[in-house]
Length: 188
Image (cartoon, rainbow, N blue to C red; front, side, top):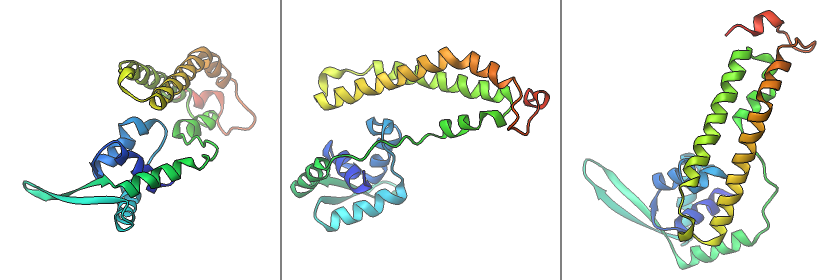
């Protein structure tokens, strides 16, 4: 999904500044399945504005530069619908956690255990936070996304809790393909 469409999607939910759009990808609903940086959001907003897809209003702030607030136009709403009618590409799962875990045999075992414990805690906290959502007030599509997200997080949590100990025990057996020996892998 391109940043242009992502911005239109955030603005479909209401007026927002570039900062607030970024927050939607850091802390909001989109944080679970998309990412956008300031370096891509602001140029996209400029293009959307020049194409008449969003209106921009400057709002004065005390002791700060004026804040630009963007609002979706009717033309922008149509562009959003046109964009989301295109079948999505296959999911790509970008995860620093997966990347580090992929090379777990290179890390000290206590570091791997800590990494797994931190991810288990992350999943538990995320599930708890998502469980507090009042789903009765949101459209059905968002309810389905919420349920799918909860299923992914719960399955990931269950998998890590079930396999953590056996995985760590297997790491204790020296591999022929790793530069570490059993003794220096236990050091932290």
